[in-house]
Image 1 (cartoon, rainbow, N blue to C red):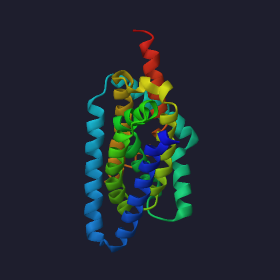
Image 2 (cartoon, helix red, strand yellow; image 1 turned 90 degrees about the vertical axis):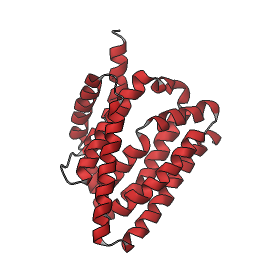
Image 3 (cartoon, rainbow, N blue to C red; image 1 turned 180 degrees about the horizontal axis):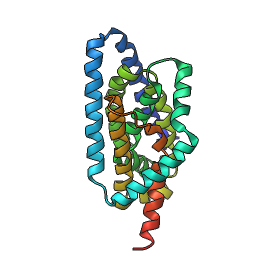
Length: 225
């Protein structure tokens, strides 16, 4: 249970930050809410580009997006997220949920931090990440509502699972796996930025399976080296 403390703290930080942002949004005029949209959208695109730059093999990223996108389209993940959000009738649920889940989970701090917490009992990386996620959740929730808060469940489940399975997942911390996985997430984050800025509705939710496809393809490629 002690090993899971960092993941629990991180998810609580997202919940608290989201609630603060959600209640603050009622006092924000449409004019300032619009500029907040632009700030979040442009920053999201910048984060996506930063994540893509470190890619090892762009063909792995490409095929991960293609295969993952087909799987996601088959199960229509985006539509299911929107349907769930409609029942809550609050903001753009699917964009808020997918954007925050990706920003909070697809990055080196999540993987390295969770594995470190699981193997060494050192949660310092995740605790630092919790502060960053707390601030981000305030901004995102003030824009997108409760979808951001629900992503706290994803944070708890994913980071908790990586922590508990740390011994079997240490390979993900090697640059060979990590860089391409982060780049896949970066493309999705970039797509979220386009969506926030209303440039293109990229249905990023349907690409979520790509995050599982990437390590598998990296492993396959490594067999032929």
